[in-house]
Amino acid sequence: MRLIWMTLLVLLCLSGLAMAQQTTYNYAQTANFSNFHTYKWVGIQGAELPNQLLYSQIQNIINGQLASKVLTVTTAEKADLYVGIQTSTQKNKEYNTFNMGGGGPWGFGGGWGGMGGMSQTTTSTIVTGQLVLDMYDPTAKQLVWRGVVSDTINPSGDPEKNQKNLTKAITKLLQNYPPGAPKKKGW
Image (cartoon, rainbow, N blue to C red):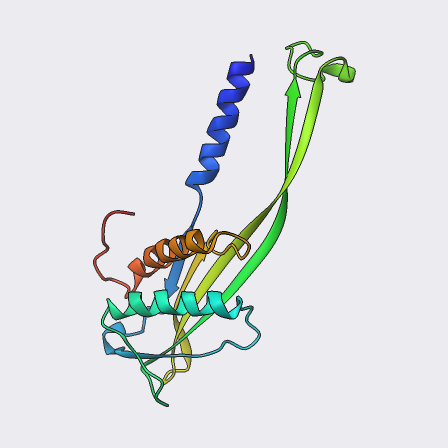
């Protein structure tokens, strides 16, 4: 019976890993993305932003990805697109309870009335981070593309691991820009 429970626990953990870094995007159907050649970074009023180091890393990764899509960053007053980011980090408590032996009619922890057996509960804090990338057409004054990637930002984690995680997530997200472009295989 323990073997069955351990197998289920391992499968549950693996399924959690498979769900990491979910990406979604949406875009204005009427926007002509072939007209966009330059972009400018802008702040989004009221947006939650990461610390300055992380913000710079995110910008550099996005700049590299957009350059590969033949978009040029500019600091000039006018640009074809305005680009801004928002982040969200949330701390969630995770509780893990392991029941060991005894008790119930099936022999796995507690049973009816809590007879016999022993259980142990541990807690851990999981930080989930989400990155939102918005692109605005300043002429039309509207949002033309939005991409969201979750489980990306971990402000308390290892900087090198975070950099790899961010690069992978942003690359995956920007596979969907511009809309209608052929998608690269491999993710």
